[in-house]
Length: 148
Image: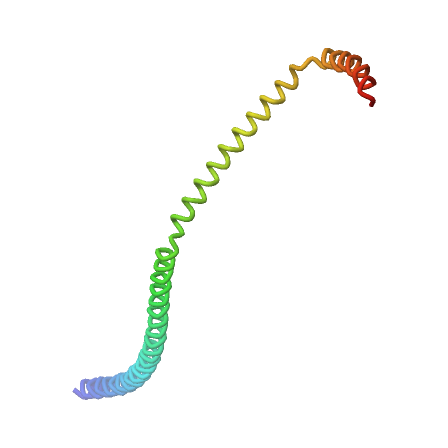
């Protein structure tokens, strides 16, 4: 029975020591959980601050974009008004018509010049020179007759 008491005491001592180890480990685990909780809380705070800062910056960018869109809208309306008032489309159509008419007139003039060149090309220069020489022979005596 003494052996049994010793064994029981050994078991109790062993259980006590294991209980102390478990308590120590639980305390370490509790410290780690506290540390992790603090780290996560700090991280979440940083993320929250970053989101707030970014949301204000995005809000500013959106405000600037809306302002730019408003300015573009105003400029577009002004440009449309100017175009409508200046009748630029009619002016461009008139200029286009004038250019087309000028092109047609130039084409006609070039055709006439071409015809004139063909006519000049058909003249027999040798015969013309002979006719001029003959005319000169006839006119010289007449010029002398009239005192020239």
